[in-house]
Structures are given as C-alpha cells and as structure tokens.
Image (cartoon, rainbow, N blue to C red):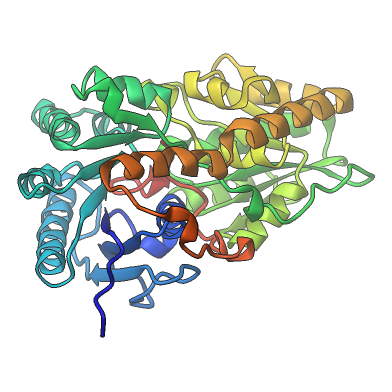
Length: 431
C-alpha cells in the first residue's frame, strides 16, 4: 500500500476526550479540508474511539486517565501521567507514521519539552492557548500557594517561548502571549472559539404569547457563578410575578445539585428548570427558543480577559445577552448585550426585568449580534486564520485540488457547550 504523503499534524489535548472538544473538532476538520492528515492524542472516552466521528479520517490515539480528580496533588498526578502517555504516543507516531508538526492545547502547560524535541528535529510545534492556568488556579483556590502559582506561570512562559507559533483565543490572550509569554508578536495569531454558520440549524422562534425564556448554557461549577442566576430569578419573581417568564439552566458541573436544592428552597420550581447536559441539536433548539441569554461570571482577573463560549453561542443566534461588564465579553458582544456593574443578583434581576419589557431593544440587539457573528465571530473566519498559520509552518501545495467535505459533514457534534473552555483543571470552556 502506498504511504500517505499528506502532511501529518498531531494534535494533543488532555483536558477531555477529543470527541467532546468542539474547538479541536473544528480544527481537525479545518486541517482536513486543506488537505492535511490529522491524529489526535487524548484521554480515552467512554467509547474508546479510534477515528473522530464526522471527519474524513482523523485518527485518535487515546490513553486511560486513572488520576483525574481535584486538588493540587491529584492534578499533578493527572498531568504527569498525561505527559508520559502523550510523549509515548507522539514518539511512536514520529517513528512509525511520520509526523510533520504538532499542536498542544492547554491546560495543562506541560508539553514544552515536546516542543523543544520537535523543534530540534526541525518540525513546527504550535501552542493552542485555551486557558490561563495561573489565573484559573487563583480563581479556584481560596489561598493560592505561591510556589504552585510560580510553577504555573513559568510553565506557561515556557510553553509559549518554546512553541513555533501561539494561537490565542482573543486579543487579551494575545497580549499575554506577547507580554508575559515573551513570544514574537508576528507568531501569535487570534483564533476565536465559536460555532460555524452551518452548525446553527434552528431558526430563532418569533416572539409570541406564552412565557419569555431566559437561558443559561454552559458549565455549572462554583467559578461560573450560576448561583447568581438562580438568586436573580428569585428577585425577578418578586419584581414582576411568575406568569410571563421562565429560566432554563442547561449544563452540568459540581454546583448543579446545590443549585437544584437552592431553587426548590426558594420556591422557584415553577419558573426555574434544569435541562442537564444537552447535545448539539438540543442546544441549538434551546437557544432558538430563548428570549435572553444570561452570563453571570463574576468580575475577576480570569473572567475579564476570557471569552465565554456561551456568549458567542448566544450572539450567534441573535439572543440578547445580560452579562457583567467584562473586557472580553464587551469585545465579543458589543451592543448585543446589556452590562451590569457587578455580579449581584439584584443587578441581574433589574437588567432582565427591563429587557423583558423592551421588545424593540431586544430586536435591535438581535440584529447587532447576528451581524457581529456573520461578519467576524463565526468559525469560518477563525478557520481562515488557523489555516493561514499552518500554510506558513507546513505549506500544502495544490490545496484547491484536494477534495473537501460537504458542508453538511462539518461540525456534527454538540455535547461540549463550548467550554475552553476549559478544561483540564476546570473542564469548562473559556478562552
């Protein structure tokens, strides 16, 4: 059998199985569409896949992850095991299947030794910067250990400086890669998260009678502050009654049992519903039925510079957003959102109450959101930036002659709500 001569890219992602990472799925599909061959190295999912569904032939090299848990020691064990398994898989591929380049997605920021190895071999290594590990550690820890914080910062710097190129998920992350990370500005490219136009198959339902729907979509961990959304629902019920609105919270996470109990204790079971973790079609249908999307993230150093995947999903459907005034949230949504000064439930309730009574304002925000999505935020624009990097690092001759997948074959997945977010230590999707 003739050996496959297409340039071969290995993509490393260890925060979750690749079949649940929407960003990496899109990257694999983009590379395939340009004629590259792709192998993903990742933790093993429930189905132990060897091929990534929905792609032409992206292979999966997976490994068991017995050390996943919480706490510094658990994370250290998880990351050390992941590094060992990834290294063995990558070395095997280098010897048996000719790898031309590699890409590592963080967190964790532990793969810089592999970047050095690849570059010593004359092969490019790309660092796909999904999350800020130092800030994430601070956000999740009441009293951060300064030694751990210093290690995370140094590893982040090494990951960026040892890479041939850095992919940043927004402008703030790009500034960090250049400033704190010390990478050449010419080798840092913004590739945002977000759905492709072809992923949005449900048209937004026209507003009619019945309840207006407030939607939260995403991970439900303590740092996501979904508790504020439930408390805002309680305050909103006091302000305007319960007849013309409801709140649907879709997603999963450590805080979900607590929030279910809180809603019951507050007597909100008739207006606050928990949808659980939804597949792609279900996410699309839910957002199409929504009236307002809520982003309750607290203002902190991590949230200010992170783009929340849920916000892009809201904007992509023309769903008006109520969010805390965060730097990258404003850069994403601009006039498609109403911004609160802080994450107090009372502020959310007042903003929601006013927007529920303002159909003209919602219509205006819808048009702004859709225009921003189709002109800038859609994955089609990000894929072009992503492939421009690879065309410089591993040129692909005669790209136009390579068969491309049909439009309907792109982006068939939906069980990851977009969380860079993030993963690894957080299993959420920021970026």
